[in-house]
Figure 1: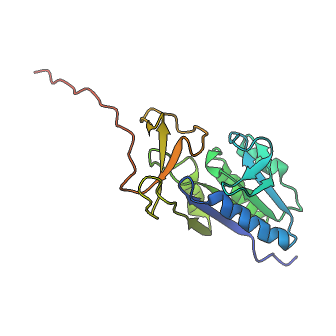
Figure 2 (figure 1 turned 90 degrees about the vertical axis):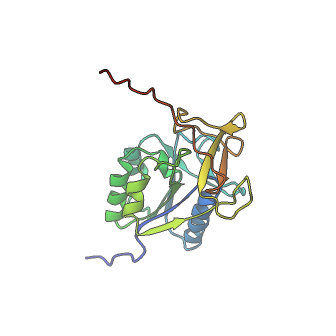
Figure 3 (figure 1 turned 90 degrees about the horizontal axis):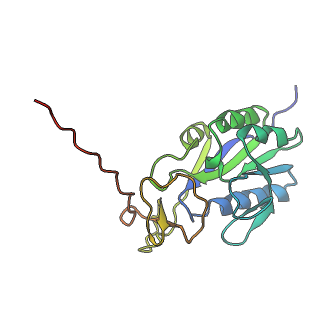
Length: 203
């Protein structure tokens, strides 16, 4: 029976837009590169901001990555020799990503992921609640509020033509600083609720 590696498991970096999630993910990857570990970086192909096969942070760091369409494809591209599996923008994957992460950990691989915890409506984003629950390490980062400058930016504000997006705006809309802002709780403007007609009572 082989000796088990002592660094396998699942850790996740989360928080709002512009809090440095991908930057932190790349920093951890570089540490393992220095240690000469076999690393596989994976990103959902729905995120097209950096073009083909790249993961990049807002401060200019970038590394090659493999783009996949579905959670199951992650298992298809991971090889036996891979020791570290890094997954960017994990909130965009389908619910099966939870089983995929558990499978990789059962193979004694270290999985490091980053993703938004909440969408622009301040509601849990896709599979993130389950992923946060199974992680053995969670790092929740905060951003600088882009409206008042507070250091407690914990919400993602979607702006369309400079105004907060409505509640009917789709959950997934790939953008950048021009369409999203990090906001603190005081500055965050929830999408307007859709008014419902009152029911008349027939007597």
